[in-house]
Image (cartoon, rainbow, N blue to C red):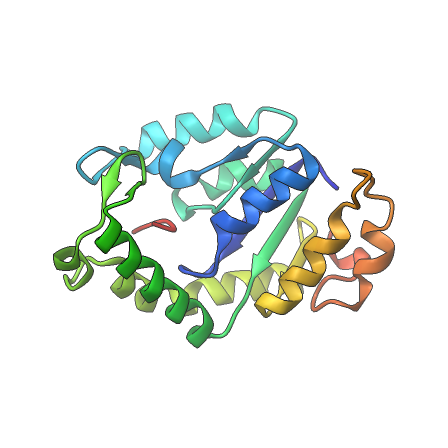
Length: 202
């Protein structure tokens, strides 16, 4: 498994969950874009120049996983990445996950994105994460498919939760070995080894 990995996908696709699972299997440090880079308490966004400073320091390390990539600092992160894992799910999959997740967070008042809390009022506002899903869905899918068509960085494109589960099972066995990763990933969408060459997920 490469040492510098970006998990990318449409809002609600499960980037953070997959990034954490990859970290558990590989031992790579996992960094949350929304917790570490994008948000301050009170839903105050971190200024763009500070986000760029933070991501530059993070990707200068030799081992990491990040659970997203914003356009405002993609020029810093992308050249350092050794692998992009792209979740290219149908809209109904990501949207249903997003709505369910948001409702649960509103009810439980779970703290997310550097200590913030989602509310039902916010969920129904014009600035909600659900509205952002609709605004950003097509653009993010174009980005993924552009990477697959012309991969400056190796790309694994996963098109369903089942396919993602299969791929994750190949990343590392119980012995921690990744020796089967490249040889067995061939059957997955956009994942043949030669081709592996504004809001966040909150």
